[in-house]
Length: 98
Image (spheres, rainbow, N blue to C red):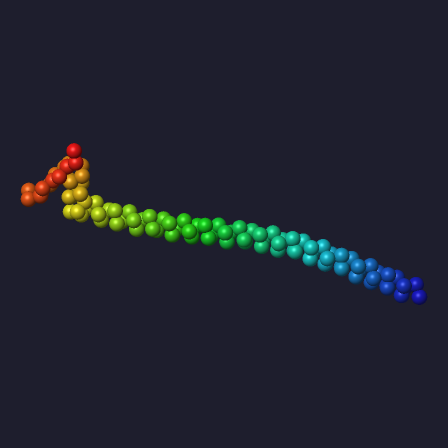
C-alpha cells in the first residue's frame, strides 16, 4: 500500500515539475516573441526610410543627368554668353535700363 502512495506522490510531483518547466518556457518564449516583434517593427520603419531616401537620390541623379545634358548643349553656351559676357547676335538690338 505504501508503494502505491509513493508512486502517486512521485507521479504528482513529476507532473507539477513538468508543468512548471513548461510554464517557464512558455513565458520566456512569449517575451522573446514580443521582443522580436518590436525589433521587426523597427526594421520595417528603417526600410521605409531607406526606400524614401533611395527615391530621393534617384530623382537627384536624374536631375543631375538633365543638368549635365543642358551644360553640354548649345543653349547653355548661348545663355552664358548672353548673361555673363553680355554678348548678342549681330542683328539683335539690346535695350538696357538706365
